[in-house]
Length: 161
Image (cartoon, rainbow, N blue to C red):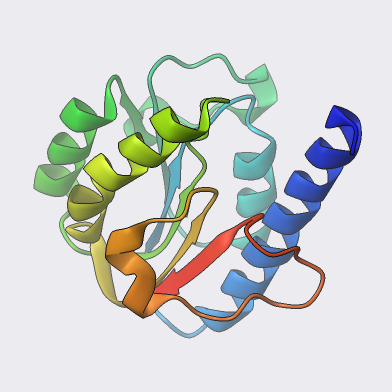
């Protein structure tokens, strides 16, 4: 499979999973979290899915398209190990959805990072929250939920805590 085809499958999986998550938290109160803003495409899609919800983003350094950068009040900038504890203090346990898109391009590094930040992410989530993750997180395996149709196995992971 070419890198282009792989990227298309990844983006399609993200869209399907986020659309599914939006329907499944429709009646659940809470804000939304985006770990890994990147160029802002997913954040932009989430603004359409959740027009009445606050969306907080976590990124080491903002480098997104100018139209896809949230207001500074909704940004947690810096290393996740520093920014997530700040968010816990500021926001508490109120997120209905977390989109964790932290892939670095190096599988073992990405898995290690996901494993390291998972306990802190949990402290931001309300009961019944959904996690859409590009990385498998062993800690959450007992909370794994079936993927909606159209997503290839191991392309994305869904959890409900």
